[in-house]
Image 1: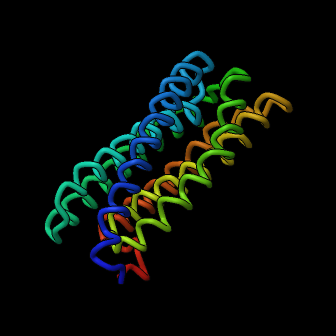
Image 2: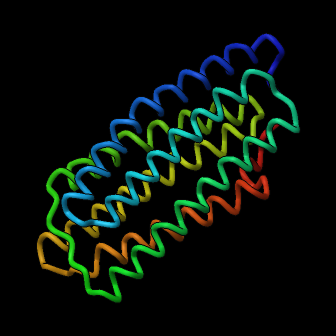
Length: 202
């Protein structure tokens, strides 16, 4: 357990990391959704929507740290969980429509570049948030770090789908990547809803 004197420092750090997440993901969401719409890529649009969930998750952290309480912690976790479920549902439905309709996405160099950049930034940010959340003893902060980790996994999946579509013409790689994104999002939603986010929080 951290000392009382350390708590304000950890809380300020959590808020700074949350604002850094918001800044990055606002840009990421705009670029991904615009590029995904232009290329008709549900994987890229889904990635952009995940970035909007990341923004909401980080805003929940800023709100929640105004006053720590069990009730507030649970409400914050539920808000994060619902956002995951909505994302998973939308992406799943659209990916299935694309698969059944054999809808092919165009190549997206911008999307590939974004996925590579996210693969660099997200793991570093997730590690910092998780470490700070565990020291703070906050399941919500750790849940938020899990969402950031998910963004890194999604970046790898997105990169694979976009690269296969662009290089070898596997049109189905894009909706398959989108379904993988939906599965990961739904799992993170389940964990956040049940509060399964922090095995070693104080």
